[in-house]
Length: 334
Image (cartoon, rainbow, N blue to C red; front, side, top):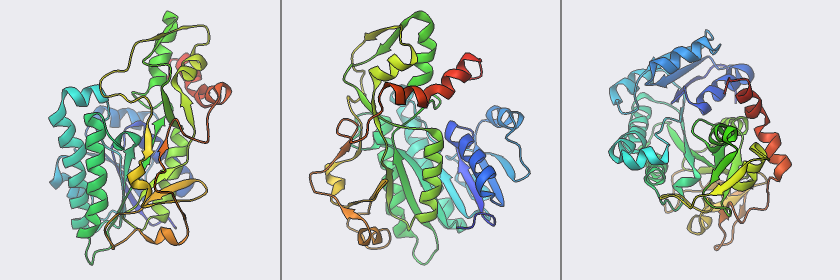
């Protein structure tokens, strides 16, 4: 795929993923233009002053809740990456209507704007918490996934195609556990909710390159799931602060012991490749089912969870992944 004549828009472009996505696109893919669509003027100002200020960039103030503004921003856009979301679990639990407005209704607005303005590809970023959700954040992301996939039925004769990417915890992203552990390190005591807890783990750079690859390959209607390693949260704590005491505080409301990226029910429509899974749309015939011709079908009772993974990060592997964040935090730049 040739990106040099493409106009790309990213919602939530001032977030951790957005910043890295923009940097990689400018350095490696050279699109004609990138539109950064977000609602926070201060974050946009800080991004520009941090060096993310290229002639190919356009900074748009706007909220995914505002359909009219999105339609204006989507004019002439070829590809939309939908990364905007309220994602802090406690904040979503305390502000449920706001989570619904941004994560569900905001996604509906992205879809409507893309269809009406002739955007060719929309790729939405989802999370393992959307699978068998136990908190409101997961519920809203599951609903957003369903909206994106099923909205391919509205494409009709249009060129617009819509797909999702679903992956696990991102190392060092804003609000993740790594910054929390780094702050707790000074006290000599780190808190972990349960010593058995496991999570999927992916770096920001890996996530960005996977998203770009999925944009290039998507047919519309599929959910792309990368094969990524698992880690034990207690091992992460030990990697961040080897000398610190680990206090186990008990699982919080809305928290899982292990995360799932593919459920047993989804496995029936999922095909496996060397480095990823593709969940095909079920019960529909429009797009996204051609993958079964080239992929390996999964057994019906298969599920891909962080505790039954074939690939694990040991202590040294975790230390290697978090090293850049440890260094930047120590330099007070994190």
